[in-house]
Length: 112
Image (spheres, one colour):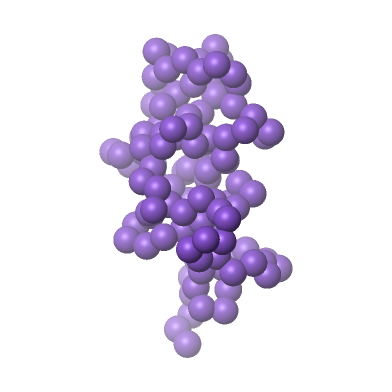
């Protein structure tokens, strides 16, 4: 088997797939699963840790006109998504990042 150069999620005994109960995301030509703030990709005998890249579709930019009804964070009811070097929250198919008195919109995610 070829060597995998991606970071692995240690001690992961859950098999992700259709109907596993986790949100499926289309990501770079494959399907990943949101699981406890991680973006997991099944890869043979292990699980790779993925992140949404900062790019033209999912930029890191201040969007002060994006207002939310609450402050996003752990326990807010929205799933955490690793994006670049930070964590965003999935809100109606879009990445939201808390920023002062508003949320920055970091672009769409395509659900599978």
